[in-house]
Length: 296
View 1: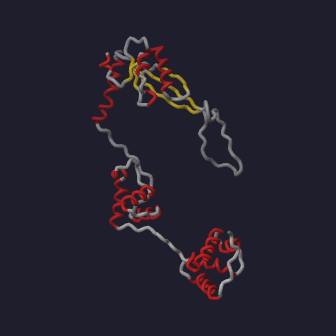
View 2: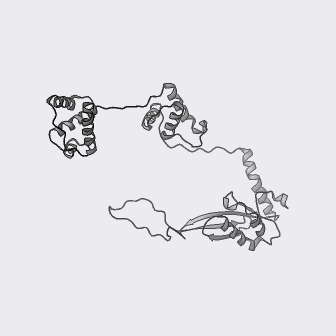
């Protein structure tokens, strides 16, 4: 219920409120006391809010608290404020941030105030606001900024192991022992990418687009290339899945099912490529998951 004004106050109450509105050390308490004084003098809530430059909600809440609690309703109260961290606990939080979440067996890459808030409550049973955590980190010289990516040199053993199989296949393909195909897919969208830009208020810029969201606004290209001869084969289909991969293998069977040399296809670990052994066999193609020398 909206209150236009309070009931008349006694002279003692009015004098106390006047003192609070002029001399209390806290600004918000002075404002609250001024709200009550103006209400007692006949101003409604809208007029008080406009005169003091505050919201109607602030005026309404102040009057409701004064009516319920008297002068105590004007004083700042913070019941149940969270405990502070000890210096040892603060040092532990800083170590968490500097070591990263992986050191505490988490999978995310960086600590933020939300995840630290949860971790602090879990370990220390202390509930801090995110702003308090931000101030703690800044007090210890930490700042929120984008990290710089660094590239680690590859392990020579891993590098050699990774290159050995493709190099062996390529050498066999150059010698004519096998036919090697490199396969992959790509998604092509038929509508333009829309980004923000400047335009006059009330006017929406129209961007011409060849596609329409929904059915038919994108297509998937299945393709292979022979790295030795440069021969390519491709099919345009609606999406990347096992059904369309089977259709592409049937397309390739027209060219390679009767090949005299074994046909090997190098492909990635996409789910659309798995559990298609029968389809690869019918197309006369062998995936590179096994050693070609063992199959010959």
